[in-house]
Image (cartoon, rainbow, N blue to C red):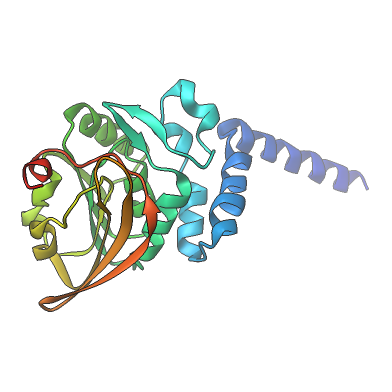
Amino acid sequence: MKNIVILCCLLIGIAGDVLSADPFIARRQAMVEHDIKGRGISDRRVLEAMGRVPRHLYVDEHQRWQAYADHPLPIGEGQTISQPYVVAMMTQALQLKASDRVLEIGSGSGYQAAVLAELVQSVFSIEIRKPLADMAEKRLRELGYRNVRVRYGDGYFGWQEAAPFDAIIVTAAANHIPAPLIKQLKDGGRLILPLGSTVYSQTLTLVTKRGEQLDVQQMGAVAFVPMTGEALKRK
């Protein structure tokens, strides 16, 4: 009996250490169960990645208490971190494999890149706003993501020297699919983006490249901030 009591105390102590190291674990798991899995996301690897990545570290400190609510949050520069369900839905739609190389357009705070990095070999992320690019690169490095590269630049043109990519994810709205991204996508690769009006709402659109043809699947209405740079010039 004495040994059982000692063991229980040890387990309680370990649990306390874990919670003190990351006091948001319970909130994160609740988010995964109710807002992600509960709304139909079924890919086990995606669910596990969403359960590992500490979303509260990708928002400003004063926003951390809201980090696991299922809605976007401002991250500065007029940009937002997407709601967790949308991050999970877009990630699941890409059907990622561990060996994949993924291009992300719109690094933001680095959260989506971190989720991708949990699932694939390499992530190449482009951010057009230098303060956000610098912040995302610093944060991802500090959190130990060695398989993510962040570049400051216009994502409309992709990342030619790192192409081709198995998957491409665009985290800002466009009214057309940038041609350079299609060229940098492998045959059989998948691209997902919010497509439509950059002022109101868009349709989340999944594009699969089949030789010279594109298979297009619409996945429902979303609302993202617009792509800037070259995308705005080619309306």
